[in-house]
Length: 453
Image (cartoon, rainbow, N blue to C red; front, side, top):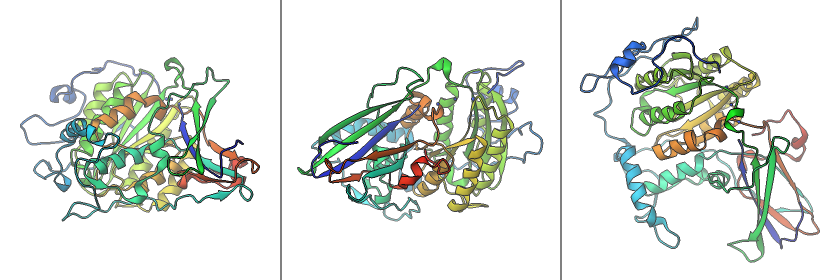
């Protein structure tokens, strides 16, 4: 790609992609409706009765050989929220009221401080990526990297700022901030043109001698009738670290939003994991939404985190109902704090990379603060051929699992790589902004053995 852009050129790429799986339910069901102890009991689930001592019962999946689910834990209702924060609904209300404080040219309504609040210990982990350097076109004219349509960094950074704290440097992934927004790029008119490009050059806001090259890639978006069926497994972390309102309860609400979008041909199974992993709901057709909601309502947090075991069971359930014409995907809801069994990100990376060969992909939704393991989230999503997102509020859950659900669930292409070549007669230097964890070698572009987004 060539053009007269001055002495130094910075490259920003904003990408948006679109993708679908299962079989209709049969027999008499209660369909959908308001969750209540009576209706859930009829479906085989015991959920809490208002005002009574909490209790939980998990029916086993009907697949042979599946282990029992993790045991329920005592109610954590008397424990205060982490860092003294109000419940997530209250924080969302406060955010809506205070957004004007961040208008252009204004200062935040309260000072920003690095690190956790006084008296607390923060164990969050982020990928340690070094910012891309400036490169001379005469020496390296080609920039090669994998697409990244994740948005986790934007929502996570927003969480820090709303809490009055500066985010860790490694938490800032510029491409995920750019890709959080819809730029209304022109969409391809048909499948015959799977991608359309948008290119613009603008003056740099930080240097007269530089310009910004903005490359937008818009994928063809499948119409509702064209979307394949869904074969999904909800993998829900029910360990003790997930008890607070911004974790398991918020994950429950988020998954209920996704259940709202299910069609009769879609199919869902649910796996929970704490000290051990177990099937909570066997593969269930999209007509039986109330059954799915009751299974989620029965979940309670408690115990350690056997995330590796949970992943293995979720993949097994997805493969059991695998449909090559469907979208086969595990959807993980967790804070990423695996501490029992296989918990090494490098080993889990190898595991999910091997599993993606079966056609079952993995998307990861992160929750919580203080011990949020972003490094684990990125490792799992990037190697599981899925997306990574961070859910800090019900508002964000609606965006991810209702407004943008087609982009997150229905891929139209695998292993997408970007390669931009600059003309040294027109461009002297360039720097790729973001994508530090997605860089590829030039020769990787035509090597199908090298995985991409």
